[in-house]
Amino acid sequence: MKSKRALHRSRTERELKTPRASNPERVKSRREDVPGAGDAAPVNRGAESRDVLTGLLTLDSFLEELRGRVAEARRRGRLTAVLYVGLNGVKRVNDSFGIQFGDILIRQAAARLLSAVRESDILARVGGVYFAVALEPFDTVEDALIVADRFVDILSETFNVFELADHPVGISANVGISLYPSHAKLPVDLIRYAAIALGEAGQQGANRVEVFDRERGEETRARIELEWMLRHSIDKREFALWFQPEIDLRTGRVIQREALLRWLHPQRGQIAPARFVPIAEETGLIVPLGNWVIREACLQAWKWQHTGNAGIGVAVNVSALQLAKPNFAGTVEVVLRETGLSGELLELELTESALMANFEKSVLELSRLRDCGISVVIDDFGVGYSSLSYLKELPVSGVKLDRSFLRDIESNRHTLPLLKSMVSLAHVLNMRVTAEGVETQAQLDAVRTIGFDTAQGYFLGMPAAISDREKASGASCP
Ligand code: C2E
Ligand code: MG
Ligand code: MG
Image 1 (cartoon, rainbow, N blue to C red):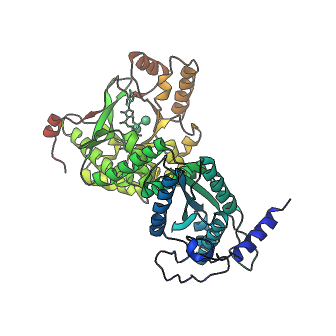
Image 2: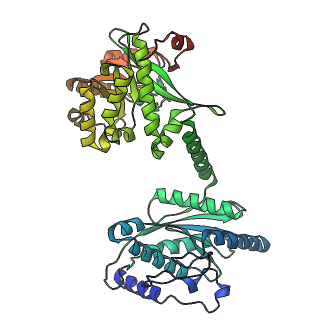
């Protein structure tokens, strides 16, 4: 059996001797045009339809060729496919050794792809580390999968980008496939769907092949649309805060209200945070949005102090990305100064994962917040790391137990003793424990008996908008 090393050698040699096609006209971006390994200077193609680095077709010319390919498949009553290939790891090479070596790697990958396709297949470099292939019409999906697997195999073998020095470099690849006519009839859609499938493949892991899935594609499309809407809504003031009371279980009094973000879209109506907060987090939009929430919540709490609700504080959800910003505590301090709210009336809710993402920074920011009188609690506690032991290292003043614990308090006999021990451990650490999601009298009785300090839930008060009356009677802010 050949060793991996031998395979690597023979591959490199083959790339160096990339054959030139005898009839260039017959071959679309095929073997004749790819400079192999060692060919460091870009080839002057003299034609815009060619990618300068690899000599392959560009996206525009690929689209042109794909039209013909689709027409051919239709005429012959057969299938065709777009294979969208993405390389992972080129950035690492760029960053470690310089862009010129990343370029060599891309050329070598192009040469390998060329050696793996048939003369009649159409190959293009559609941008950066992405290639697209339109296959010669075929009959079963299996045919396309075989080619895609071959791509993954040849691209995951080591490369030698340093020519003389024998220093192999390993990367990985993913492939997304869309099929004509099952997924789309238009070339642009075929490319788009293959790119979506590539994204799916990437999420599954390295060296994966995925065929486009219409349902998943629909989800992706809806997500992209929501992201677009979100970007445009932030400036249009389509957001509002609703407030839900948190009750002291000993006195029955409201001690504070949690600010819950609502997106009131003019056409779509109310969009739930579960739907848009994750997108806002992925895109970084949560930072400006979250800053708006903190300011708005503080303004509202300041108004309560002056309209018969003195002493009632506000709790604000903060995402990991906000905490990760330099000088997060300083930003909050500025809001307190500008709104005139006392720090003791502001509580920030963070999840375990947000706090653990950068433990040292969390300790630093939380200490500074505490110096301003602001308290921090852990939201949805119990579903993440679930370890109270590290909590003593963090300046947090309480935990809000995730509402899933209350849901099965009656059905699961282990839940009650578990909650009891969690509550007593939190008390040993001097922390307040809040029960989330109290929906029934029975649950309220249970959390009281267990020894929770505070509780929140539909049974005690629904999240609600600030009423017009309340708004009208509000004191004018500083
Ligand atoms: P959370 O911080 O754990 O907020 C509690 C969620 O539980 C709220 O959902 C609330 O309406 C809901 N809830 C309250 N009582 C009950 C109950 O008795 N039963 C049930 N089934 N649910 C109850 P909402 O408003 O949809 O918010 C969902 C999540 O979105 C929040 O969970 C929080 O993680 C996030 N979120 C909301 N506003 C913001 C915000 O301003 N910034 C950030 N970063 N996240 C936010
Ligand atoms: Mg919360
Ligand atoms: Mg929660």
